[in-house]
Length: 240
Ligand SMILES: Nc1ncnc2c1ncn2[C@@H]1O[C@H](COP(=O)(O)OP(=O)(O)OP(=O)(O)O)[C@@H](O)[C@H]1O
Ligand SMILES: [Mg+2]
Image (cartoon, rainbow, N blue to C red):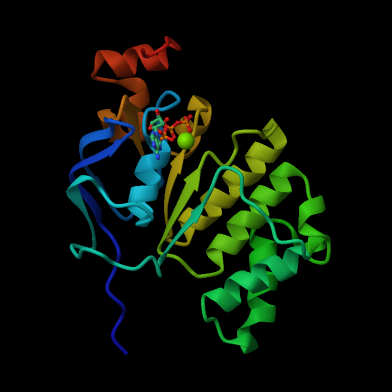
């Protein structure tokens, strides 16, 4: 059997998104390659969520184009996204994953083993039968990750998965991100937490007002930011 064509690299070519009479992303050129996680950082409203939604294929550019594996209009079969506030079905944790497997046309014979494997991966094995909506915020985030991984994506987009979490819950999510990356799944993730970006990033992209102001390998970004905006952002100054 021939391997399905890859969705990577994901390329943005002069991508502009207009909304409310202005450009919320402005002529963005960017390539997301296979490899270690890409971390999106930048102030509120800088365009991180918009960029993730474009890369997932949920919205289309107003100008420019997005390609997946050099192809346009590729259905998001091999991509998955976890939104900032994922909503759970009023069912058990296991049933939430089962629903995702069914939606992804995974054969029923594989569900049980796959659910167990995914719960294990996100550290929720003991919570299989618990009502998903009764899980804590951090546990729900991990369940959302398991659900997204159910479709066996090649690329996983995460929109601030640790935004409302304490350090222990944040570490649990970061551990899952590392485990996912170790399985050669490309992670593209936004965060407001510079420490988190430093811990996880193979590559960092800094957005400000809908533009990429700096993009470089993680260690380089933190040790040797080249733009003034990146230097100021790292120093904790407000980018206005
Ligand atoms: N459909 C829309 N119509 C009008 N403006 C929009 C729309 N979607 C997003 N915006 C605006 O575009 C800008 C970028 O939004 P986006 O959600 O991508 O930013 P963000 O970097 O994810 O911000 P945050 O850190 O707060 O999550 C914001 O100013 C937002 O208000
Ligand atoms: Mg956002």
